[in-house]
Image (tube, rainbow, N blue to C red; front, side, top):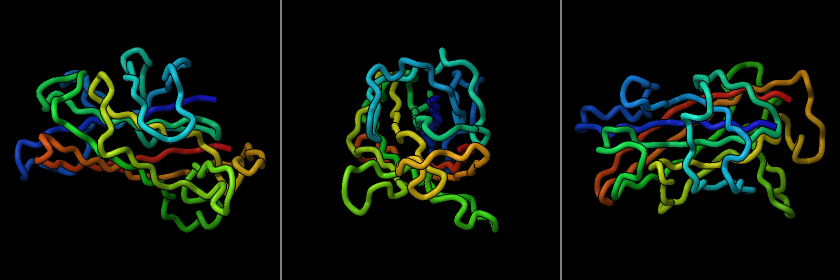
Length: 215
């Protein structure tokens, strides 16, 4: 199984008219900040993997992870792990370390592309709710949220583990059914972020990447 991380950078607007509500475009010329790209995560990171969705406290050494691919072009498979990372760029006054008094709350909401053929061929999310008992077991898990008071890692970024891809059909892998080698589903999702500075100034960001999940 493989693991992938989508990294997004966010810029501090100079004023209200400069605020676009978007995460930054990929820009290797301005301080080497990568954004809206997927990295393949090598074995061994994080040192202590999470078993449930949540914030990862360890910094991600992106510069050692090889060449990323643009978002929208990621092809992954059932069983793969998915991470989302948001990081301030140099417009916040420093790079590669936590920005004083800067906080971030972000969420990831999954769905499926609005086309005439999706019908019942895909579910709303390739993830499932991992609970042991009850009527909600293996329910499609469509929404992930970070703690409001979650601290960034040592590189100033917040990284969220969404879990492993579990289903392209209701209850599929999570319910014990095998994957289908010829099947692939395209998922769209929305990542939203709300940055706060000094507990007073608020900035919001959004992006809608996609990914192909095989199996």
